[in-house]
Image 1 (cartoon, one colour):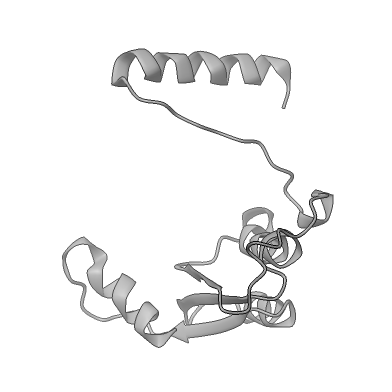
Image 2 (tube, rainbow, N blue to C red):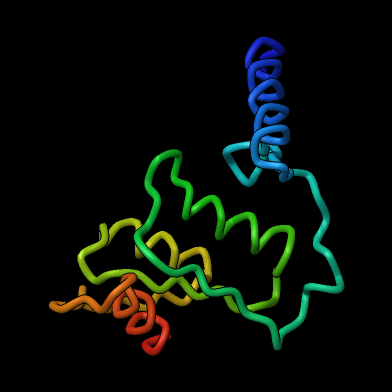
Length: 128
């Protein structure tokens, strides 16, 4: 991160500390998983462990794809990664996720919504 931008960010964070009385954490990370040189963590490399990524896919910088690559590479190489999203998502992206070893579950977008988007959260989870 450029020093100028980092200084602006640090100033903003310090302002949040004094105004809100709470901490804010941030970490910069490479955009692409291949630029991360971290060995798998044996504690997390368990076959009985799974991660569910739920919601709309993030296409900017291939964020969802890179996240699955990162989990497979560093955190959970032998664990299940489940991507639960809507059936109208881009089919090429869904296939790429499958090719990476993720289990992809799609569901139709609910016609009626409960308060606080409860339906949009529970229905895809039940499908996974």
